Image (cartoon, rainbow, N blue to C red; front, side, top):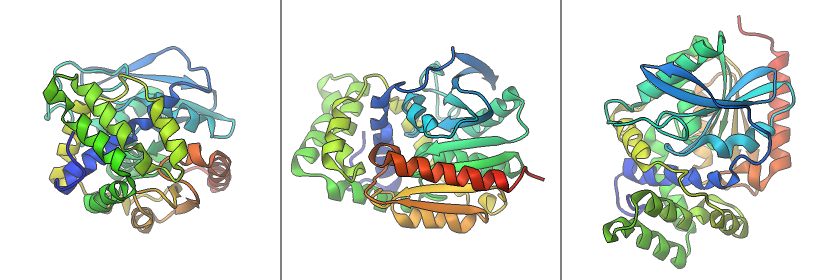
Length: 323
């Protein structure tokens, strides 16, 4: 994986965003998931699982390139009355795609996958909950289909452009201790020593986990339990390469008039400015800041995270259905 040091902003962001795969250690703890379901999008079979009943909520994992299972505790943080839909994005989890190329894995295509899921679920509008890259994907869908959005919850989101990329990577790097940096460098070159590429990428991510947390002890415990085969670096590389071409959601987001909650840890390396940039574009958005929390507020401050979601959903429901 590329270094966080002197690589270009897109390459630095690819490494930094991919490191959010650390959440995969949570596996499927929590709700029992329903058996696998699937739908077709552009000739590819994509998969999802569900938990609970009520209004469907689609949960989108980060990376890009890691499995959705770590989002189960996020779904469990929602109040009763919601069916959580855990989507395996194209190229991840049970939605592996043979012979992916830069032409068959782009932002436009994964946005189209969400539209195919909406049709499959028979929903007029989608309620999307995204974390990190998953929140960027949720915003991209909203920008492309503002009339197909019910509500959005954006957790530790990347920005509407890649302007945030450099400070995100720099903030992570600034928090690392010498032993973290040494371990990262060791694993970034491990594939050249014959180590499996996916294993090397996962181990490099494990080394920089402390850069994402307020509490280093929690970060180290978190990293120690990382699950194998939860990250797909080819997916990360292709999608980040596509974002580097012309990613800019600002015009589309200004057209979104549905309720949006932006959840931001005060110690999240993505930075408060990123949340404020998103907030400025979305006319009906609210920012909920959580103190003593980095990029994973449901882990570091679970009760405050639950309260933020509950308060938003109560207000958003009171606002009534879309016109």
